Image (cartoon, rainbow, N blue to C red; front, side, top):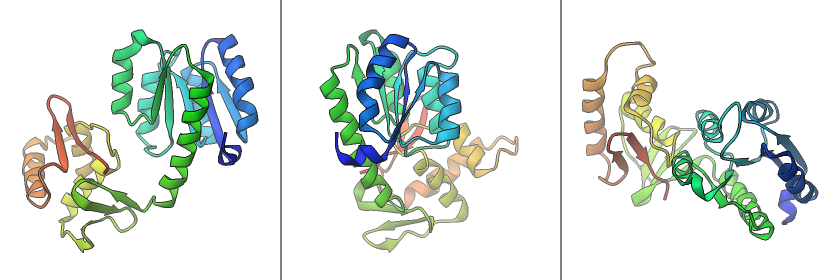
Length: 229
């Protein structure tokens, strides 16, 4: 494992005690610290308390399911790398997890060498993400400046209204993840309880006129998303 991993913390979630202890013995020397959890509820508490650099989780967990755990984490945290371990029979769950911004996955039985290689790659990617956290590169050579809340194309600022900016930010805050119209409306209109479907439709139409067609994807029956480059 790269020396970078020795500086990082890992949250490892597995309900099979014997398997968790076995993997923890392998992983502990390679990280600054390992936080172990046997179920989703314990894992969520550890995540909120310790803010680990990386997460390794079984997809089937008691108390809070692995898929739901990832969904809860991704509501606030789009950056922490998450790798899921799943059985082949969990294919449907795995596909849902991928939509939530999953970094990597492995199908059980997990080969140790492959696991260590992927964790090393995740650690390297974490360095890249942190060093460029203020600039998010999108499709078609567009860039989003996080601090300034500004969209650029080839260095030129794309002029947006306040609500267009808020709508775009809500999509970029959930980069590579499908979010529902309701979630976007709540972000733009601050969850005031009113029906904003028509307003949202007009707002999205105005925004899309200023952007390339492929930048904002409409996932039929689910919502919208923006993909990173």
